[in-house]
Amino acid sequence: MVVKRGRKAGVLAACAGVVLATLTAAGCSGKGAVAADVSAAEARAAVREAAGVLARSGTSRARTAVEMNSGGTRVTIRGSGVFDYGRRTGRLEVVLPGEATEDGERRPIVELITPDALYMRNRGAGVPDGKWVRVDTAGLPDGNLVTGGATDPISAAELLRGARSVSFRGEERLHGEKVRHYRGTTDIVVAAGAADPRSRRHLAAAAEGLSHRTVPFDAYVDARGRLRKVRHRFTFPATAGTSGRGRGGEVSVVSTTTLYGFGVPVEVGLPEPGDIYTGRVAAP
Image 1 (tube, rainbow, N blue to C red):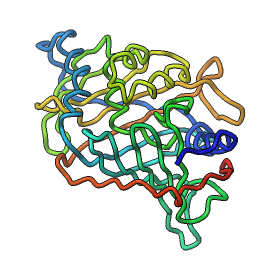
Image 2 (cartoon, rainbow, N blue to C red; image 1 turned 180 degrees about the horizontal axis):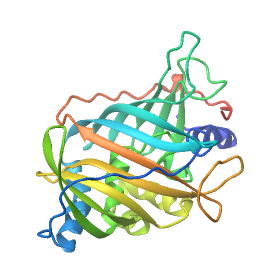
Image 3 (spheres, one colour; image 1 turned 180 degrees about the vertical axis):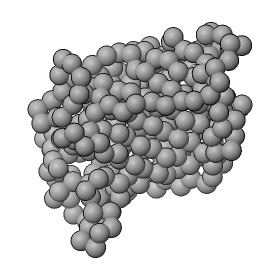
Image 4 (cartoon, one colour; image 1 turned 60 degrees about the vertical axis):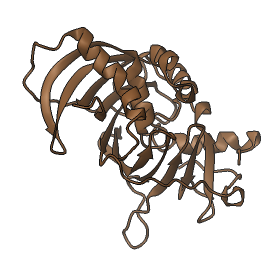
């Protein structure tokens, strides 16, 4: 089920094309009355503990959005699906801008996320219909934080284990529930060291691939301590063919993950070995 070493470069190039060809920054928002009764230490603890609480929360639905800019035009890659936090597996359907079929419908990329690999169907020129592409996520430059067009909820939460300089921004309502809004930065190197062993390799790879070890975030946590929404702003080194903003040849991406519908049934069946394509995948 593992892509052969000689073909891995083509697969990674195609995966990276999902995001790294059109990166940009997007703003953050967060309204609510700022309260002074939550100390910085309490805010930092609430955010750092959110990953552990989420791991014990069973399952949920998820929505993802990755905002970027291509040639001055802002585009958003959106996804939706379900996750099992105990098993650390999930299924997303991601729609890329411009991926419309002849009848005008957009065919989603189906992504299966596991602790070790990302499986994608309907992705990459030259891949036969119905076949899957398997990628070792720890081998991706960003640990698959945005390469697949989404940040999976597990990685999004584990990133917060390195939270620092956190402030409480007030209370808001999200999906009918009251949540607390926190804003701060997280140290991805610290997060990698504190993360669950199954996420550690991914975050360590991301620490090498990002331009800065600190990542700004806005996190929304409910009364049970569960992460309900998180927005990260990642910065990457610019590469050939990449359109970016900012100084020093850097480009940035804003990734938002929203969690709701806790307790839903989740079934993630992995492809059979014969259904995995091991040939070269053309970059988009």
